[in-house]
Length: 225
Length: 210
Image (cartoon, rainbow over all chains, first blue to last red; front, side):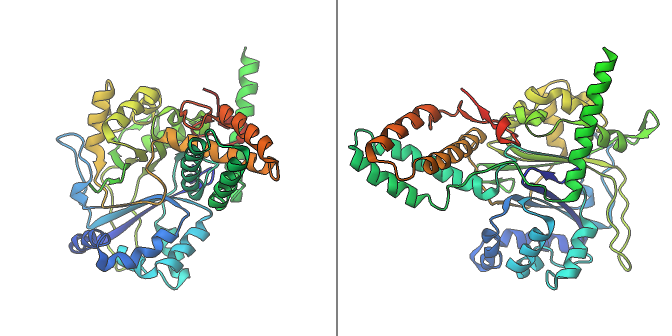
């Protein structure tokens, strides 16, 4: 099990909503895209640690029935699934959410059963911990990159390609002038990436267990041949 | 389309599990063990799948009780939850997922209701669509570019940052020559390479030549 893949953390929350309120919650999500409510979530855009996040609200009878005689669920409550991919530690993420968009969180988790409000932080932490489900396997296509690295890398690529074109046939002095302007325009986007540091003792313990397991497997294979 | 934010697509599937045990162990335990044994990062079978940004799997075997006076909900089935963030439309992605990771998928989804009917990419896509939930709200805090472009961009960012450091204060003509060599080496517009390997977790494992 691991919630961590390189610099990304996978959060899974499953929280109950009283059935009669679920359509209202869905309406709030729809309204989030409108000017009236957009300001409530403006802070979400400033949480640059997020790669992707989604909310999914389902009634019990909307749980998939793969076969015709499938069961579905007859749950008392509807459920909201929240899946997020972010950089940094659990505490950084949860605290950032609470600080940046407290009223937005209260809207998105409106009257979810047990929801304590986003502020103060301790009850909010307890709620997240209580409803979080551990990821069993997590894959990330760019474990060394934070979300900001991905965004800035796109800027670097675009700027570099344009620079190559615009300096074709330039004199050395013209080239130097444009090069300096390029560096100035990219000064917030140029940084070096590397392997993720150890972000928690738990993740290091998992990595160690896997390394030990690999060594043990190799020994077994060697002895067996 | 609530599953999409630009060209990024949110695939959310929850697949009911059979209730039988497998060799005296619950299927949830067997699946967790199989997931734990999957290779990670650049060795992951998912690293071969085109346009997959991130994915996760876990077994949902119960719903959390919120304490009195809330009611206790019990699930009739356990579920394998499979969540992906990807680029582009779903159908070609699922075809690429099956083509590149079919053995892993067959092992992990083996105990899902209805998976016994999966024989090829087409039947796998039909199975996934039956288990798919519609996203209520999808937030893209990153980009929605094709994965090959994202990996090339990360490679270029890394290499150009190094170039800028190594050539600080250089004279104009020497800098121009060095930059021409740099462009020849990194091939900024060639997505096939050199670039970064999907899933690479260390710099030593990252670079892929064309």
